[in-house]
Amino acid sequence: MDKNNKRIALVTGATGGLGTAMCKKLFDEGYTVAGNYRNKAKADEWKAKLKAEGYDALLFEGDVSDFDSTGKMVEQIEKEAGTIDILVNNAGITKDSRLINMKKEDWYAVINTNLNSVFNCTKHVIQGMIDRNFGRIINISSVNGQRGQFGQTNYSAAKAGMHGFTKSLSMEVAKYGITVNTISPGYIATDMVMAVPEKVLNQIVAQVPMGRLGGTHEVAHLVCFLASDETSFITGANYSINGGQHVY
Ligand code: CAA
Image 1 (cartoon, rainbow, N blue to C red):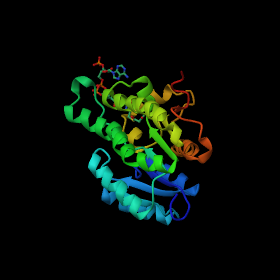
Image 2: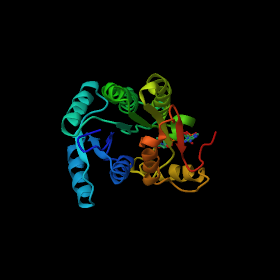
Image 3: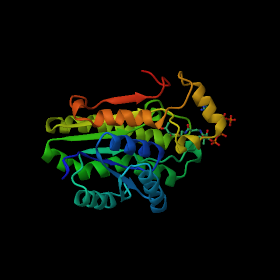
Image 4: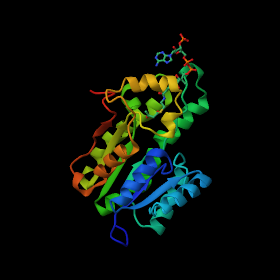
């Protein structure tokens, strides 16, 4: 724990729709929240907006698709806030197109940001968690990693890869009080989902038995559940949160 005896949570991709909701909910639950960002202008605006709402989240710059940049960011967080107890690997992008049209750059960008980032961040915090005999690693995957999605070979591959990582690491660190779990959201009302062409999105929502997009607060609630001390026997699991769109 940090100097104030509060657990510290690092949320990557903090300034996006899901990241923002997670930071707020973790803050409400009493965690010290360290948010990661890449875009300084967006981050400054985000920080001011949250501060006006009463949220005092710390923000740290870092490119989680880059191993060394992530290492520097973790070092800075540990110096300024304390050691990281909870890591939420949330940063992610889409570069949708059919494989036939997909540029090599769009494949690598999505794999680096959505999957290699999970290795980069976890690798830099895991030893500290082992030393303190406590840790929570929460990987934000997607329904499209579970079932595939037309136009998302890159994204679906990265998101499915996250769960393989979760399952393997959960076995390696279970004896150190560290849990590793995946959350697989369906279509949530974020800018990323709203960028899907309206006609396609309407078709997708029609496949959701609840008949609506999910709310970011619904995913944030699940993050807080898995971050808590009480969920110490849940590890290697994949939590679907998709309104019934994909059940198995
Ligand atoms: N299944 C089968 N065929 C499909 C299809 C589908 N779902 N969607 C399109 N097609 C067919 C079309 O009918 C068309 O066929 P014809 O050539 O015979 O007419 C062909 O594929 C080409 O369709 P488009 O012209 O639409 O193809 P495109 O290459 O211009 O666009 C696309 C493809 C960019 C993938 C577009 O369909 C799209 O944006 N789809 C949405 C992808 C999506 O759901 N992304 C999720 C983003 S949010 C997110 O990822 C968060 C999360 O975790 C859930």
